[in-house]
Length: 236
Image (cartoon, rainbow, N blue to C red; front, top):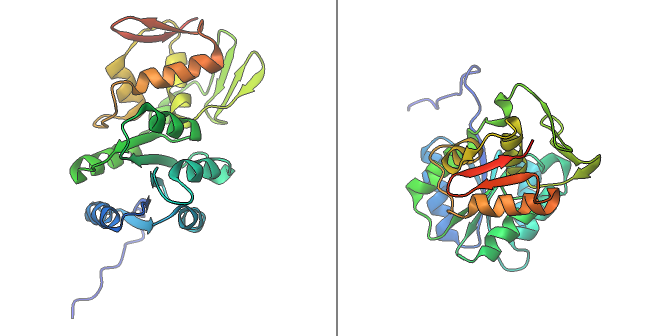
C-alpha cells in the first residue's frame, strides 16, 4: 500500500475556490479542471448554500452563476460585499447572457470580472490563474494618491472626492489607481487590460468603457479624459 503523500510544512497551501452554479454538470466539469491544476475546490448549487459555504471556507476566489432560482448571483455578491470579510475577495460571474445588463449588474454588485457561458475549460482555468495572481496595486510605491480633488488610499481601499467618501467596486478602484498613478499619462487599452485584469485574461471589448463610464458618473466627466483610438488618462 502506497502511503498518502503529506504536504510539507514549507509548501504553500493550495488556493481555495468556491464554484456556485445550479447545473451539476457545469460544477463537475469546472471542479475537475481546477483540481487538476492543484486548486482546492468547494461547490454550492444555490445562493443560500453559497453564502454559508463562503463564510465557512473563506475562499480566495468565488465563481458565481448569475441566473439561479431563488437568490441569484448578483444578490449573493451584494450580500458578500456588504460584509467586511469579503470586500477584498475575488468574485467573478458566470453568465449565459450577453446583454450589457448582466455585466453592469455584476459590476455594480462588486464583481471583479465575468465569464460567458458556454465555458471552455482551458480558457476558464487560464482566467482563474490570472485572477488569482494579479498583484498590480500591491507593487505601487506611493500608497496614497492625491490628484485633482480626488484622494485614493491603496491600503485602506478608500476614495474621497473633495473630502467625501466614494464607494466603487474593486475593478473600478484598480483602474482609477492605475490612471492616478501617473496623472496626464495616456494609458493604452492593452496596457490597462494588462495592469488591471492581468495578462491572458479574456474580457469583452467594452469592459474598460463600462468601468470608465461608471467612474465618470461618480467623479465627474472632467477628471478622466479620452484620447480617441488610444486610451484614457487622469487629468492633472
